[in-house]
Length: 219
Image (cartoon, rainbow, N blue to C red; front, side, top):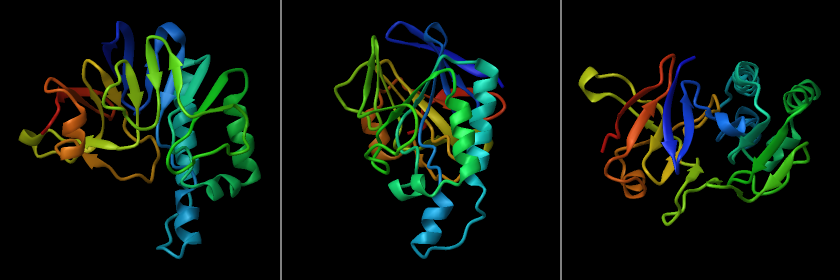
């Protein structure tokens, strides 16, 4: 799977077509908004039944990235679970799968607004993380630089081709806002006022897919 290479605060990064971010110099893989257990959470709260396979699909795609890149560190950038109860509802085979992915590498769970506390799994649980010159958190801070965050599930489309909106990285000189990696996740169009206020005028969107494609951020 191809990626788009760029720099942030002088560090070379790769926005992968999968929606994962790779920092080669640190052998660090970052994903955001896995929302594991979303179908279980919706069913538990009396919502429409969804096929209960999104956790397996998300973990399969994450495993493919880990197999391809062999990272020493994985950072999950918040909202890794759709809520705290969803983490507790993971079945035995899924827990074993997660443990296998974690084995032999540092695994960081950044807290999100859907999972604001430890989830009782292996790894380290942090509110945010500084790895100079970069910082990692769930929700972007307007004054930050060298920041990598998630939360908004950004998506964008190439208007002139009439293509559908795809999960997308938003990148400017100060920050990266990552797409949601989870299978059952919606998204916020980049042309909305919230993302427009966070991103600089020269920001780009990197559309995910078999080829990671960079375009000026649609506004």
